[in-house]
Length: 383
Ligand SMILES: Nc1ncnc2c1ncn2[C@@H]1O[C@H](COP(=O)(O)OP(=O)(O)O)[C@@H](O)[C@H]1O
Ligand code: SF4
Ligand SMILES: [Mg+2]
Figure 1 (cartoon, rainbow, N blue to C red):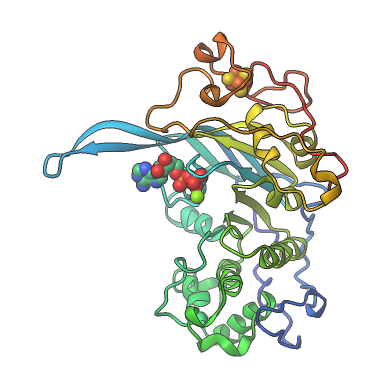
Figure 2 (tube, rainbow, N blue to C red):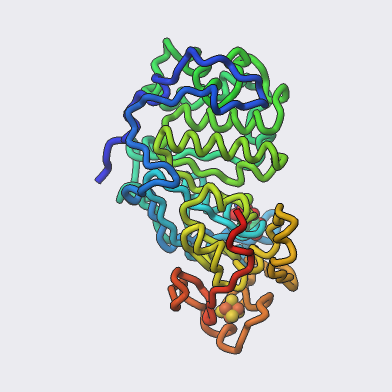
């Protein structure tokens, strides 16, 4: 069922070389020439294409062990406990939830850094778990990841040029050996870094620049999907916008699809076509970015939205304030029924016994709450 990449094999090789190098850290979009790879890019805000990634009933339970010599399993951390997601070509899906809810585990499962306990991941209709040899190698090239921490994710002993080119050691056919330096420089240029800096080390760059290096490393393998695991969470707000803009430009030009992970709904709103809200290992609400933002129907989504800072002083007083009580329960011992019930102000007896399904109960999009009801939390005209 696999289909050829729409990028073709020439996306990076057609990168412009005549673009003046921007000053690192002062990324200028206007100075960047559009790529001419012939991609029929739909872009994040255009019409969506075929389903590329389909995640069904995904679970990851980590064993909890006791003992030093004789380890015995005393329980399991249900980091991911039944996640369904679909990512279409050219689309961005935002995955949002508090720290510890299982977002990074989902991303590691998708890029095959972890093996699922149960459930499946299909890429263009093929089950990743059944892929072997060539197909798995192709998959590992086509689905790339950008990590949250640009300090930890780059090897401090490697030059930036070697970091960007590292993947070509395994996927040699993507970049012919002869033109690799030029290609690395083209990639650095494309992400807004000075191509003359190929021989510098990660510590010589700022946080935002290091994240650009991570993006160049992902692009080097000409992926179709990039899993962005909180790519801007560690950056200053002003730098966050620059990195998000770069990702959007790249999507428009290359037809990339993103799973964009964040713990804050404000970051994903503008970049996402659809948003999935995660709580304690599963998705509790899903819809278009506008549906989830304008008419959140799960109490957890409403609480998350109410904590998003508003930049318009005039609108601040209009926001519905919901303060979440208590801590996130342990994923090793999640509450029965609805997992949100220990913090939910609407909880009834049924919530302790019946796990709510993620379905549309008339609010226009799926929500895993027995009493789902759309509520305006943030004034709708807030942009
Ligand atoms: N390798 C692991 N072994 C045991 N527990 C893990 C492992 N990785 C993650 N966890 C646990 O799984 C849960 C989800 O973690 P994670 O996916 O990193 O969440 P998030 O990215 O949303 O912060 C957490 O409770 C975390 O401690
Ligand atoms: S199902 Fe019950 S506990 Fe869960 S979110 Fe809805 S009202 Fe709250
Ligand atoms: Mg994480």
